[in-house]
Image (cartoon, rainbow, N blue to C red; front, side, top):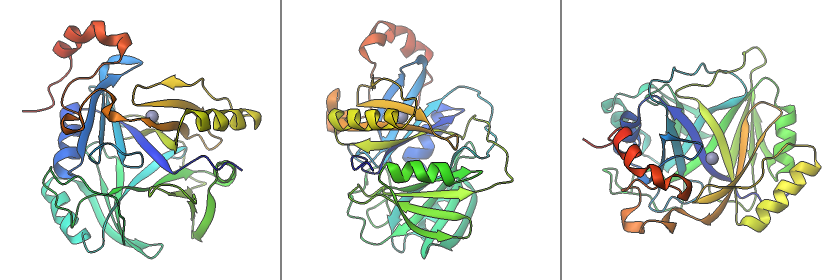
Length: 310
Ligand code: ZN
């Protein structure tokens, strides 16, 4: 069993409109945009990152806004819900705030002894806020949500699976343990990780496979401390029979990817070097940052990419 995985690193989804996406995450949810760059494999499309002040692993929601992409069809083989941690007693505030910002599907419930508020993002993206006692992570409070209410980072992701067996087995190999089972949901936890340490596995045997589009989670990334431990994880996964990509430089972290038996695309990303490698912490997310290989496209991309601010 591996001990190098330290919880979630980031979650990457797809959106239909960059400006709408940016407004929802910065204004409605109050997160900080920590990076404005492009999809390294398709540089005419943005890659937008939202998180806490510095984009600490375990807080970072990222988006590829493909203009006019069709909406995804939710199903199995994907992350269905991305869940953020908020302070105790804050869900009433969030119910009002999300309603005022036009969020749909707002519904409160209690599961696993936790109060949660489910809602949908601009493209039907599945989200929830869960009240967590004593989440010590410092929130970003410069975008209109004060510290008594602000999002601390991820709590978990919930994966929709036709059968949880093989995915649960893989996650246990990656260091997760079963915490609790309720109805059709199994909650896993990784000991010794960051605060984004939970995974929920939902078993939905009669639901067909999701079709990816706007509002779909493209992949979920798990955190490792550094490149050495990433290589250990890569070797262990390959020795177990997984097809894992080579290490890819994403400028703010190094990444490896592999498809899991339940259909969900996993990434393992390093906590180094972080989002301040090419911008001061005080100005994260402000400029259009391009990787070396796309620097020559700067004037074309500046002209082509949609303006995010009014
Ligand atoms: Zn990623």
